[in-house]
Length: 152
Image (tube, rainbow, N blue to C red):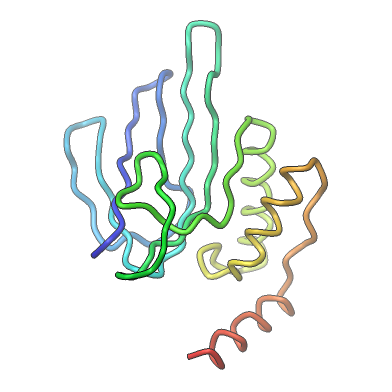
């Protein structure tokens, strides 16, 4: 069973979009709404923003992992049935900081969805308390790939 994410774009009012991740499918509901699916194990970044009468009332970023059948998961808004939460931060400054970290990782030539899940947890924990995260580098990525290969 795939994890489904409900995306919506109401210009200037509500934006829910995927920053990275490889979807397994997509269903267009109407011109403003679509549902994307992620295969079990897929890691993706989900951004939510909502504007109110006096400016931004919500800005959140989450890096989630779609779970396999039988695995524990956490419910998350607009994600069905839910996912493993690797990073979950709110506030535009934190959202922007995570987006910058993603850009740095991608400039290394690393696909953001292939980054070690522990790194995303680290980024969320550090930014959550106002500290800069340690940089992700090719050595750390190589170690993650080797560890993942041994675990299979």
